[in-house]
Each structure stands twice: as C-alpha cells, then as structure tokens.
Image (cartoon, one colour):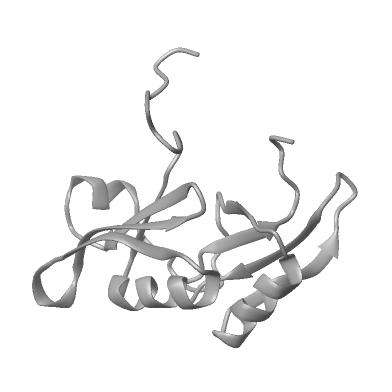
Length: 141
C-alpha cells in the first residue's frame, strides 16, 4: 500500500464540525461510548479541536468556524437533512448499544436488524443530524 501511515492505530479518521461541539462531545460519549482522547477548548465556549476514541478508531471534531476548512465542511442545515456519507462503527452487542443510544436521546432511523451480508445493524442520528451506523459485521473477519 502506498502512503500508509506507519505505527498508527487507524489510518482513516472521521472529521466533523458541530454548531455546539462541547455538547456534541458529551453526547457522543454518553450515547455511543466514545472517550475523550484530546480536547482543545476554543474561544467563547467553542472547541478548537477534539479527538474522541472508540476501540481502535477515532473521530476528530470541532466547532463550526468561518475559516478555509469551514467553507468546505459545514454542519447539516437541519437535523433531518439528507447526508452524503455516514460512519459505520463496529460494536460487539448491537442491541445493548442501541439501548444506550436511545436512553441518551438518539433518534433511531433504522431499528436493529439482522443483515443479509451478516451481522446486525441499526442507524441513528445525533442531535445535529449526523447519521451513524452501528453494527456487528466486521469486514476484516
């Protein structure tokens, strides 16, 4: 493989911007089980940069800003807006993870269901509308 990062846990890291990044961080940890790895507060209660981990994966996020990258990546217009991509996160127990997410207020858009290709899956939206998929299918196995 060309350009593979050496000595790293994951080579693909999802990047998001949130209108209320501090609240998103707390919610993602409570609802989905992410853990804070590194959080850099910004001005006026914003988040300049944050790294949350789940297993050997990571997401990076920050507050929406009017900068060069912010012109390219913006939060959804509404929590119901269609998305052009979504994250798939492998979990051991889909039903237990679903229950945790629902208890934290996740809006489930696809109930847990066995998949034709193997594994079990559910999909939900976070408070700002990002689509998240959680499943037991592990494409590495």
